[in-house]
Image 1 (cartoon, helix red, strand yellow):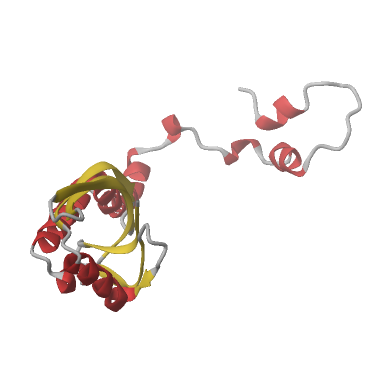
Image 2 (spheres, helix red, strand yellow; image 1 turned 180 degrees about the vertical axis):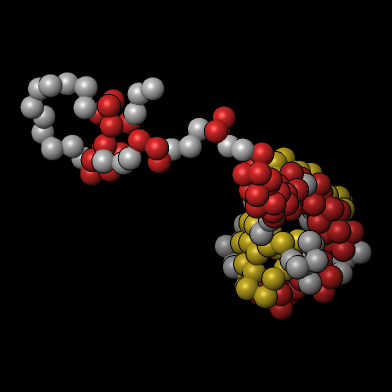
Length: 188
C-alpha cells in the first residue's frame, strides 16, 4: 500500500522546498487515514446519529428552496386579489418595514406607508385588472427572488380600456411562519 509520503518522495533529485500543504501531508504518520472498509459496525452506529442530525437540519432549507415557485405563485395570487379589490393597505402589508418599491416613474417608495400611497395613486388613476405570471423563482430558506410578467388595464384619454404590461422583479424575505413579504420590487 502506498502512502501519501511515498507519493511525495518519488524522485531522488534534489527539489525545491515543498509548499506547506505538501510538507503537511508528507510528515503525517501512515496510519492517520482511515479507509471506509476499516470502519467497524460500532463505529458506524456511533456516527449515524450525527449524520441523521445533519440530514434533518438541512432538509427544511432544501424544502423551502424547492417550493420557491409555488410560494411565489401564492404571494402573487394574494397580490393580484388585493390589487383587484383596490386595497392599497393590504398590498402594503405584504412588504417588510424596510422595503423599497422602484416603479418606472423613478420615484422610490420606502416602507409600507409610502408604498401604500403609491398603490392608492394607481387606483385613483383607474388602473385595474392586475395579473402577475411567474417567469422564474428561486432562493433559499430566507431570501426568495422571482421574475414575472405583469399586466393591468388603464384608461386612455377617451376613457376606453388601455392594456398595460411589463416585467417585474421581486425579492422576498421568508417570515417565521413561512410566508413571504416583499423586500424589493421593481417593474417597467
